[in-house]
Image 1 (tube, rainbow, N blue to C red):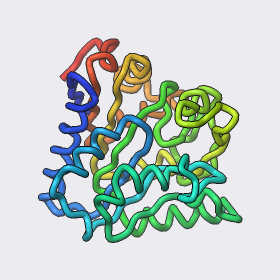
Image 2 (image 1 turned 60 degrees about the vertical axis):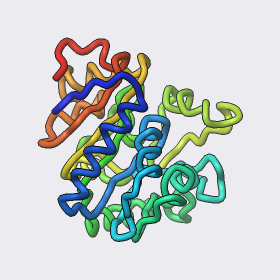
Image 3 (image 1 turned 180 degrees about the vertical axis):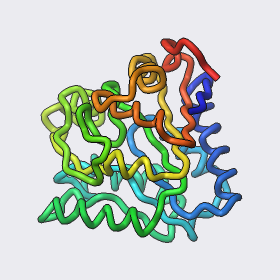
Image 4 (image 1 turned 180 degrees about the horizontal axis):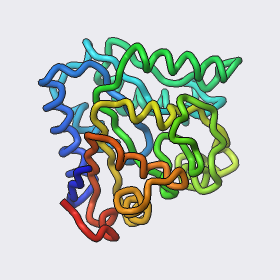
Length: 237
């Protein structure tokens, strides 16, 4: 696990972009994408670039249950605004949060991931250590699944909604086992509120109580953090 400490989120986005650009020059085909505030500067760098994604596939981590791209709070809408409208892909996949049968939708998403192995996965991390929407206690063997969002996750995401009551309480999420199949993982975390999660993820035991800790077992992980998020680490490289 390589730790890169940057001054701020803007610089972090540039570092992640440079990593992506290098991998694209090596011929990668599939990107795993994340939502939330952490990757926004990364997407900004992509929008301002001349990179062409028309030959590539994207697969997103998650979507709220009950929302689709007709809702401006959905992750499908977020991705259009942040990336897809400016940089269309050959194919872009997000979980179907409005599927009549969510279990079938989850199995279908596992098939999509199997057919499009992820070369480069962008991640954020929640204050409680979740990756994707895989909350503490999630099995490391889990594939795409329907999850109940932890109260802390609902509270953290309420800043994007008019009120906390409007935040969906369930999501459909790529599982931890699915995330771990990515060839390269780049995790972005900024701000003091992420410091405890980063310390536990990097230096703590590998435990399902802290989902992000499983990344210690991956062969190619880059963690990009600002000074505040890195503030509790005892060693940095």
